[in-house]
Amino acid sequence: MKEIATSDELATVIASTPACLVYFSTDTCSVCKVLRPKVLSMVSQHYPEILPSYINIEKVPDGAAVRSVFSVPTLIVFFEGKETIRKSRNFGLEELRQELEKPYRLYFS
Image (cartoon, rainbow, N blue to C red; front, top):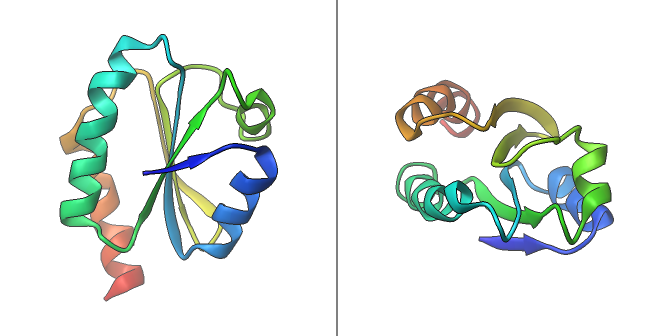
């Protein structure tokens, strides 16, 4: 999972990658720590063309503010630079997988 260090780097990753998933979190979020490796595993196994990225909103608060992220965990999936899926706080992996399936297959098939 690529760690993003600045809001400019976040903008570059979104603009230059056909598909990316950005995981917004903090070091103190216990749910985030458990969920993050599961999301990474699912994306790696089922959606290898999606670049998984991580941004710590305590270290890069402007990166979160620009994307209107106000709670953690928040996960945003971009296809061709456009926000396609947003999940915050309470979401399951199966729910995320089902929502990713159609846009992923349309874009990469």
